[in-house]
Amino acid sequence: MKDPLFFADSFFVDNFERIETMLFLMSLCLLVYHIGQKQERKTLKIIKTGIRKKLDKLTMTSTLRFVFQSFQGIHIFTFDGVNQIVNLTSSRHFMLIFLPSFCLKSYLLS
Image (cartoon, rainbow, N blue to C red):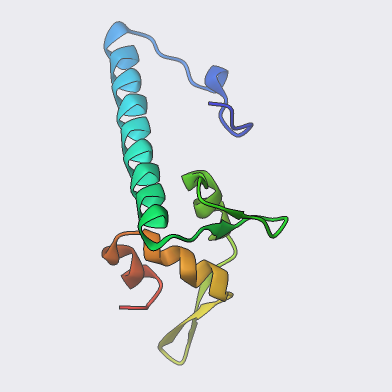
C-alpha cells in the first residue's frame, strides 16, 4: 500500500460483496508475500550469508520486494527457436536459490 503505483482511489466498489472480495484478496496476497519473505530469510540464515543491496552492503533481512525488483531487467530472447535468458547476472542467479524450484524453470535453469 505504500507503493506509489497503488492507487486506492482508482477503483470503485459498488456493493458490500465486492468490498469483502477485495479485502480477502489483499489479505491473501499479504499472507503469501509474508510466507515468501519468511522463507527467504530462513534460507539466508541457514546458509549464513546475505544479499548485496545497492550500496554493496550485505544484509540478511532483505525484503522480498527488493528481490522481485532486482529481477526486472531479465528478459527471454528467442532466436531461431532457441530461448536464452538475457541479463541474468551472478547476483540475480544467487537470489534464485531462495525461490522455489518451479521458479527456476522460468529462467531456464532446471
